[in-house]
Amino acid sequence: MNKQSRLVVFMPILLAIATIFGVFIGKNLPSSVGGSKKNSLFYSGGSQNDKINQILSLIEEEYVDTVNTDNLTDEAIAALLEQLDPHSAYIPPVDLQGVNEDMEGKFDGIGVEFNIVNDTIVVVAAISGGPSEALGIRSGDRIVKIDGKGVAGIKIKNEDVIKKLRGKKGTKVTVEIARRGSKDLITYTITRDQIPLYSMDACYMVNDEIGYIKLNRFAEKTYEEYMDAFKKLKDMGMSKMILDLRGNPGGYLNVAISLADEFLKKKDMIVYTKGRARDREDFRATSTGEFEDQPLVILIDEGSASASEIMAGAMQDNDRGAIIGRRSFGKGLVQEQFEFKDGSAIRLTVARYYTASNRCIQRSYAEGTDKYYEDIYAELLNKDPNHKGSLGDTLHKFKTKGGRTVYGGGGIMPDIYVPVDTSGYTKYFSDVISKGITYDFCFEYTDVNRSNLTKKYKDYRVFGQDLAQADKILGEFVDYAAKHGVSKNEGEIRKSRLWLINRLQSLIARNLWKNEGFYYIVNKDDPFMHAALKHLNKK
Image (cartoon, rainbow, N blue to C red; front, side, top):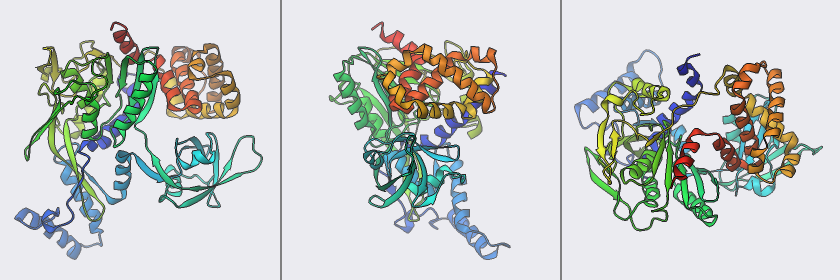
């Protein structure tokens, strides 16, 4: 299997995130354009607009078959925006609420993370501060009835579960739960409430002086979440920081600016924006930063886009900390949201953003959307330590505040490059991951051994250091996988051993200690983290 085919397993998620989520960088002040005829998309103030209206009218009045003109209009708008750039987008009414919930960082519901295992809704975790946690719903609980109707063994889908469990704040839903060790079903009547969507995946102390914070987006509450994590780690002795923005597709521009301000000196340039119809607008640091002088590393990769690139570019151009990882996505376009009366919206590119050294991070999309995303594959396959990839010949040189050379032409180029690690890749590893066998095994293993594990290990650190237990878990997993369609292959298992152990330990740790445990164990064997620790240990 060649290197490109090895990476295909991981690419669909990356591309979906970068395409969809990356457009949300527009300022957190959406404008309404549905209130007047002048602002209507099909305002008939000119001949071309007349032509669009006339075509729609002709179709509605004369076309041979009955058509849904609303759907036709939606598709026409989407096609129109596709001609502009890869990040201007149309959002139908049915999707807008979910899109806004992601960025606002909240929704109304019962507050559980769930998955469907063996055709049964299984609670992965009750969300902290939500009504389910308050009532005592636990990880591993099986939801078998909702409002008196059976939901197990009926091939229920994720979207169906969401429809049944979400609802307006203050409304009630009754769930009946099967719990290991309990003979009878347990009935809970849950009053739905506002549930937070957290943008901080984890924060913990790597050692006595280095703190780690991982952000998955730049949403409405991200800055507040970061500050809470920062204060927690500072109280624990943090004097150096690793800020992990890998896979972070972006978010609100103003949130990225607020976060960057925490690390830069007063009047340092963070970013500026400029568009054809928008004057240049500069954003500079204030005097309020609480981590302006201490050693800093920011981790990025090809999934780091828009607001993540603002952060990384601001730190790099002001010579504030090391950027470690791989070239970022290269999304330097600013969108604003314009909403219509029917509940739909467009996110339209109105400006480009530029770093302090005058770099525009946006990659070229002149050759079309397909080529725009194909370049990401090329970057993943690049193992050149000098990081000269598919865009190397088009890069332009810029100077940082301190006179260092940095590069433009598409994305943020890291100061320390970390190539894709394929050392433990085998077909066996790919099969057990892609078929969900690792996840299913770890859930069942935790479910059966939860009490013993929490008694034996006081926290995820102790659990992650028990390699003898890890090998026992691996042995049980290999037998489990063989029963679920992936035959034992000793050579490939031996090659993938460390990857498999890390995967199994981290998933079990997530079931017991949530994301903090998961990321602590994942990062133990992570080349990005090794490079970051090596750099910070010199400081």
